[in-house]
Length: 138
Image (tube, rainbow, N blue to C red; front, side, top):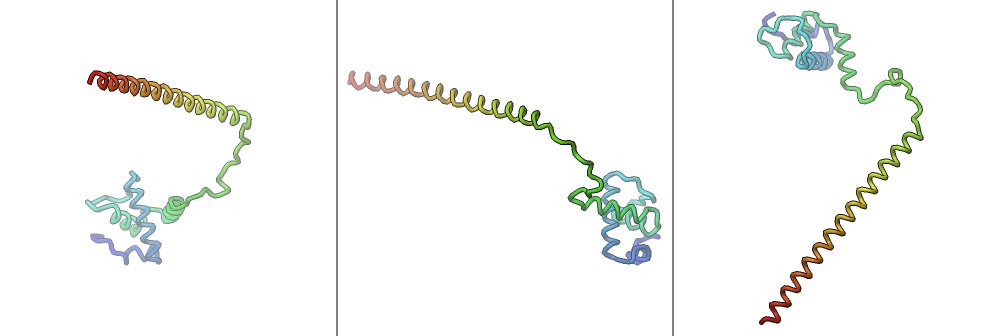
């Protein structure tokens, strides 16, 4: 098959919309590093995907499942393992440590600000004294 047409693939997947979705999923898999089942022949990934579907070298059911998984936003309830009860004491302890560290950082920040303000106040006093001396000399 020199050129892949949709007509070659529609025989395998009658719904054209589903065909587009399956071929695009297969092209994404190839781009991600999946092994091609036919020779590349300098074709791009979408063409290879269509040729694979037409030649039936990929499982359509596998592509359907892969497509659904890629579009899912939440895990099905059957696959989710039941989580263990969280250790409330450990969570409270971690929270207390975090809050203590935050309070220390805030108080340290305030101390630094107070020291900077005191230094600025000293500089202002020195500048005011310097101005008063120049006024007296004049």
